[in-house]
Length: 205
Ligand SMILES: Cc1cc2nc3c(=O)[nH]c(=O)nc-3n(C[C@H](O)[C@H](O)[C@H](O)COP(=O)(O)O)c2cc1C
Image (cartoon, rainbow, N blue to C red; front, side, top):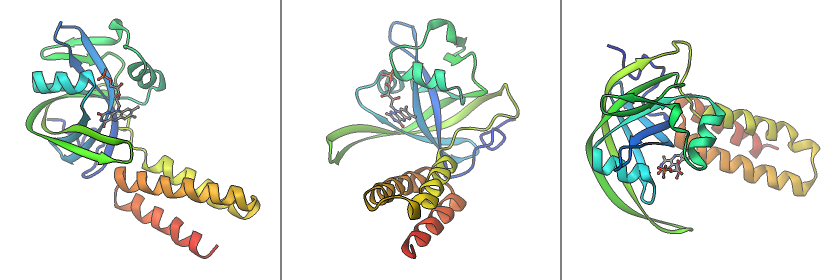
């Protein structure tokens, strides 16, 4: 049976996926959502209240997770509604026709919390779900994790730091610090180690 590890996911990493759910009126919905791989058959996601995905997952307790690196799918499912013809009807909802792989997830536990940050208070549902019916369409595709892109960006800023103005240097340092926050949130041990090496190198600059 294919599982999350056979799709290329690793324990503890956060992947950018597109979650497909069914609206109350039966129509499909798609939205990009980060999915943490807990083990080969379990995921966790953090759903902010206010989205259709939040409501649909609360109501149906099942959803599909689509793996893709298609930029247009990500943009179209964020801005407005993804075209109906992009969906594939499944037994318990919808997947995306052009996904590299997808699986159905079944909610096992939900915890609704209030989160305070500089933007105010928001409500989120921390959803645990079991992985069911994994379908691998493109065997060579990897799930999307942002950590390596962050490290490459941070390295580019690092190599430019000696050749830019003091003002630009400070901007680059802010960007590297923000990248470090993201890498530590979404990455694995090697990503975090790599980021630490970049931060250490900055100290001696
Ligand atoms: C790459 C990416 C990752 C996202 N991850 C999450 C997430 O983990 N949780 C969440 O609630 N929203 C997340 N969002 C925001 C939702 O996708 C966005 O609010 C969307 O418009 C909700 O659409 P819906 O109302 O059709 O569900 C993410 C957006 C992007 C672009």
